[in-house]
Image 1 (tube, rainbow, N blue to C red):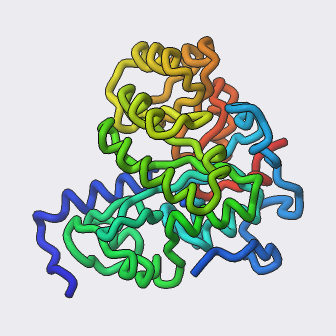
Image 2: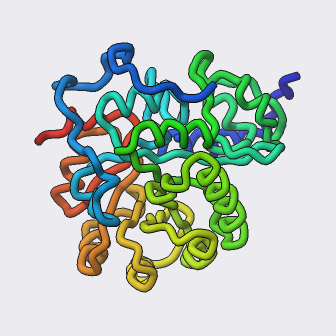
Image 3: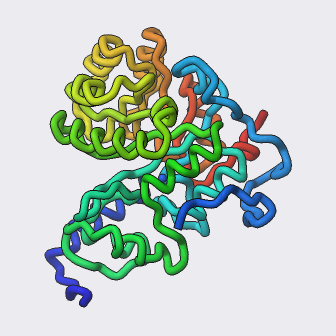
Length: 306
């Protein structure tokens, strides 16, 4: 039964809408001929970023100005974390993907932004229960926007195993050290159950300085991103923290971005990505100002000037 909408739920709905629009059966191998023609200009060109997995930690950024946000947008919808979005973005040349991770009520990792009531309408779904996680069975039975396929983390790992040139950035949204450690214990366990070598292609996003010790204590990942959308530290403190932790990528929203901040990070050997940008002109402006790249929903590699 769908709960009746009440005015008291409006702020929660608006918050979820803001997050989504300002911001991943076993997956089968890509069949590129079945993909929709949404790759942009020069769609037959080779991907601009290949074999990133063979590079030294952080060197992939020099070849990847785009990170596919929430596995990429599809059909005009951002944030689906769906199988079809992943297949389309990979087929169009993306090789670095970001996905949202949540835990079902029965303990499985799935690709979903969160379980808030306001998230359901954003995904074209009827509200199931206020803020309560679904079971895995219910999650898998709920189409996204009417026909896109929800994905579990294990299914995404199977896809990664079949596509060894893919890197994955995690978005767990846990800024508390203990909670971050708990979800990464699940991430590491599920990854090892599919293929332990995939851990070398996972890039955790951290949200606060205390996350580093907590997550690195679970597993010593080769590289991390420090993302700022939940972080209120000063620019100067951010620069000090990433230098101390040895993290070489910082991700920030437009409202946190400034050329001065980017240059301060660059002096410490730290690359900057801005999210979420879906305008080619703006991407080029940011790159001229020293930004290494962006997270994007809809821009494909072939659309960027060479």
